[in-house]
Image (tube, rainbow, N blue to C red):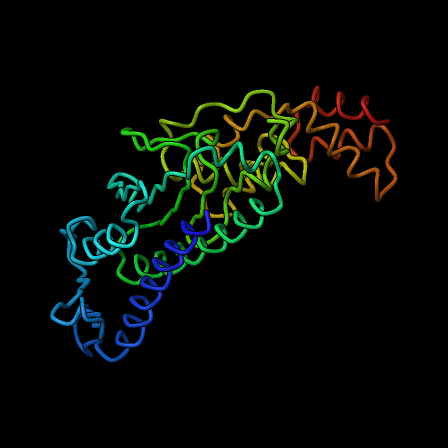
Length: 298
């Protein structure tokens, strides 16, 4: 796994050089008139090429641009010998890199061998170092709305993975899911043990999957009603349909959430029984959910 990490670090450095070159030249090559911005780089591979984003009605798909093909070429070169795939989803405007994990990686980590755990932590840092400049490149060139890097158990032709099939997900340079920290390693139980049924998200859009992941993040440390969770996700910038998808598919037991919310209030404030029911209704719980929650803790 050490060798695997070194190869990914090489990719991270290559992407960083590309990003810094683009940043350094961007301010120098913005025309004072018009909407055209040309990104130049001193990279030997880029020396003869201009990378341009122009505001037009018929925008060139990102996977038809030279920037995209350079990214693919660079990844293919540096990941030679490592099974991987670069996919641009035009429907979701999402750039996804899928990297197949070394054989038996999940089992080795589940054994919690200190050397394996240390190597995995280095892997996570390396993947963040890949994801961050990758996101900056597509953001600066307006190439995609998101850039994800996944470490998966096995590559699939469908390019659709549910959470049980990947070990790590880096979204726009930030750690979104980590098998080692977001699960009870060795037991096979998810940290979301309150969730009775995590549904397959294979057919979901990137926005819906991201909203669902964010919903899990919130539910892991705070209780929400169905409507309250939707409102919080909308506040985070997700559309109503994406937020509703997350609330519908997160698997939360809303009676249990009402009980947790009731306990949260009682932990720092005194309530009468009727007052606590009213407070839970104000939070968006139905009358029956509020009564269930109060009866469970009062």
